[in-house]
Length: 441
Image (cartoon, rainbow, N blue to C red):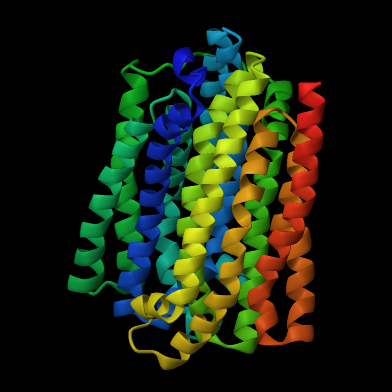
């Protein structure tokens, strides 16, 4: 494992470790996209809008999982780099337990107060039943989705991204089959989509449990004593990711309110489809970020500073190429992309086509910000990471979302994210440059 993390050929290290992560994250996004296509064809714009209205709940759970997971993986891989294997196993066991317990509490609360949660999501009138039908089923599977995410993070941290990819591929194939059966053949609508996604994630969950229990892994479950100091350290390291994910929950909620007011259900449905494109790109970028995260953490623990910045440079080039490709496809084929989900809805096609063209500028900029965020997290610069995360995910986004529509009209809604990413990039570039000078001198 140490030989992989300290490989001198930067391109080889990046490709061997990040490519499987990229493919794995792309396959993860494909589950969501397939659900959207089937729902768009069979249920229509109301179903697409309902999915988007439930996303704030999902992002809250992701915030918990990624916060604890990133903190745990960072400390565990730094411990491996420092040859402290017992300490690494402690952080592994502690993190998984914390993720399971906290998410279980949240899921139980959602299930108990389901009606109140649906109303809080602004699912009014006829949309209420669509949202409730989906959330009432999928909520019970959220815990398995989150544990799969945590398993995947630690498996990748063991330099075994191909194994994580295999688990994800099995879940994807299963989900596609179940979507077709439950939604298209059995006509279960929103409940069918929820059951398909939920049952599909059980397969990689069982694979993950089996892998870690058979002791073929680098990380091993062991007994531990819960200490508030260690939990605080984990949360501090993952705090930037928490801000990012919880901010997505908040901003998605606000976006939905603004879109419902200006465009109605078709506006939210259009934003859902644009979100699918963004989700695909984000999963690819997240694959790159997850790929370099444990390598940077390991080399930081091993004091290999030069390796860190060579890898950072390679990752930034990769995310820029991804951004250019996604931008070109989205801008040129915006209406064609919307039509995949809209099934002849002319108003949805018009709103989504215009929105995607303006929104696509963000695809050129967000990669740098994501890599900068994972860089700061990996080296323990939690305050700087939290600043970058809060700017791009909450502060700037909310300010521009509340101001731009009143200055530029409807176009201002779609320009909110590109402008947010642009301002954040300028600030992130300055902070990365300053940190590089500090570490190399």
